[in-house]
Image (cartoon, rainbow, N blue to C red; front, side, top):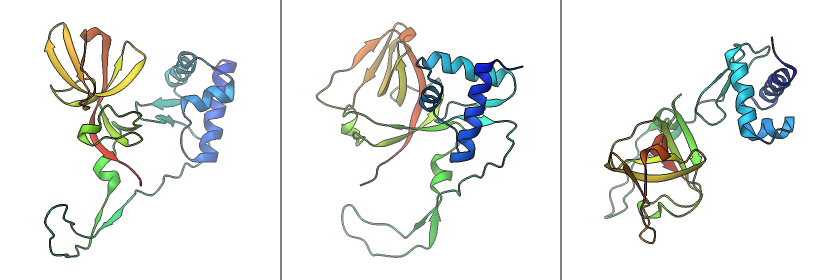
Length: 201
């Protein structure tokens, strides 16, 4: 049995799904129900999940209705025609390859999510402010991988990770103007590793 607050949350999620054909964000739920604390929203969602009404994932808008009373139509998978190759060095002969590139298959998955970059700390490897990065959800990363990592439980950043020793993990910006910062491993929670990037001009 749901509490009134839980029922209000579920009703809003269902209404949002019907209108937008996708899940609401936490901020949407907070604004609709006048809840300012993200932790409070998370507790409500956990209760709905424990009681079998929703399923959650780490992905952006990662809420699924388990027993919708309406049909949720999925968006068509994005695909773009692959028309060949273009030189970024010496010119090459233009030959049309009539294939299709399925962007969804290349970068999507239940364990993938997208983040929007804010800042220039990774610009030396071509990740610029306002780019979008695709992250594969995982709590482990190999040495020198680029990761989305949470610091001290609240601040999330995109950096190259380096394991110095058992008590020191270094986060390295890819910007020659910035210095690496060392942390104790207990201060860091890896949220995923970088697997893709895109931007619109």
